[in-house]
Length: 257
Image (tube, rainbow, N blue to C red; front, side):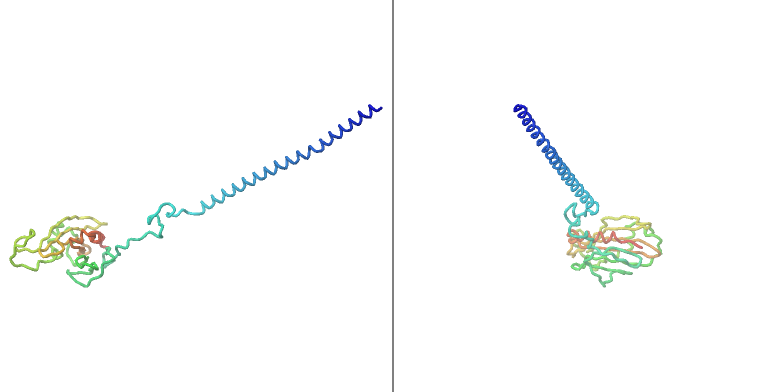
């Protein structure tokens, strides 16, 4: 009997121990499951946050425009505001014509030629100037005057007249008795729009000139029985010190409306 009781007691202890182990096992499994699920939820939340951040960044990129300042540096990139406009010249619209005038040139009341309707001159040098004259003509086209060189002969008053006519043997390549000379450096007959123009570049020199001569650019055309002439000029010394740009751009900007 003692042996049987011992066996039953031992079996009961073993069964009790097994029951205890079995009762603890589901709890451990449940804990691990909760940890795994929590980890999965944490990962899903992190992914969701990353996706949301990506979407926000993408939306910001689409919603914003990249300005030129973000692409480069300097005035061309618009770092310091709007690009500067050309302030060297001002547009002028006259009666039947238009041109661009250097912004630092002022209006002048001096009248040099017949039919003069406009004259502007440099603030610091009166020999740098532009003038426009309009006179009546029986010509239908500027070509009716002949070649550009022949036309210049008919309007040579534009170059100024020699004031001294005595006998002289001036130096500097002048003919005997002459104190002024004019050389045509360039001539052309461009068509602007549907209108024929004459263009001449002339260098005039005088024996007592202190500028080494004058560069005179003449642009002329005929329209509706009127001869339009624009003459822009600068002294030779100033011509090579920056005035050339202003004189050339002014002369080339002239056109009839």
